[in-house]
Structure formats: structure tokens, C-alpha cells
Amino acid sequence: MKTLFQKIIDREIPAKIAHEDEKCIAIHDINPQAPVHVLVIPKNPIARIAMASVDDQAVLGHLLLTAGALAKKLGLEQSGFRVVINNGRDGGETVPHLHVHVLGGRPLAWPPG
Ligand code: 5GP
Image (cartoon, rainbow, N blue to C red; front, top):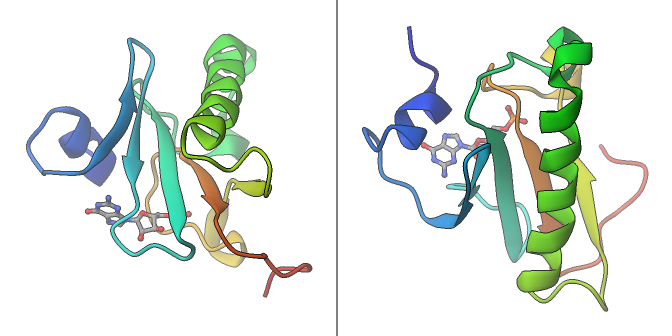
């Protein structure tokens, strides 16, 4: 069974694409929690960060570098932004395909709710 994000990667479900390369895709979240809310998603699905292994090291680094570059591209460098990975029930994960949230464009509360 393909994950929702795999279907987006395969163009079976539409999404607003912010970035794409050979290792990942970045899309604007359908239900944004801030003026800028994008998801950076590996093309090779890893269910969640707790399932990642040493073999995933390069792609994990790539996701974070892409998140930082996208935040800059989307104008968040000066104001700041947050990078979030939700894992499991208490972490608020709803799609079991690893994704890095990049949120910004408003002050974000800490600690998160
Ligand atoms: P999670 O809760 O798993 O950390 O994040 C999943 C995110 O995917 C949520 O922020 C949710 O709004 C977003 N999302 C769910 N379905 C879709 C969709 O079909 N398209 C897009 N662009 N985002 C989605």
C-alpha cells in the first residue's frame, strides 16, 4: 500500500510543490499551521524517524539541509522558523511516511502544545 505522500510523489494526488530533487519532494501543507508550512518528504519512504537506520543517514542529512534551504528561499531566514518531526501517537504523527515540517511567518509558541 502506497502512503499518501508516496501518491503525491507519484503524481496520483495533486500538491503544491515547493521543491523536488532526486532524494526528496517538498510540498505546501494542505492545512497550514503558519503562514509558511511546508513538508520535506524523502522519496524512499521511511515510516517515521524512530524507524530510520544508519543506512538512512545521507537522506536524513539531505532532508535537514533542504529544510534550511527552503526556509531561506521562502523568506524565513531573518524572522526565523521551526523544523519539526512528529513521531507516533503522542508526537502527533498522522501520516506514516517520514516528513520534516518547516513552519514560519509568525512567532511560534514554546513549549508546543
Ligand atoms: P503529521 O501530523 O503526520 O506530522 O503531518 C502530516 C501533515 O500532512 C499534516 O500537517 C497535514 O495537514 C498534511 N497533509 C495531510 N494530507 C495532505 C495532503 O493531501 N496534501 C498535503 N499537501 N498535505 C497533507
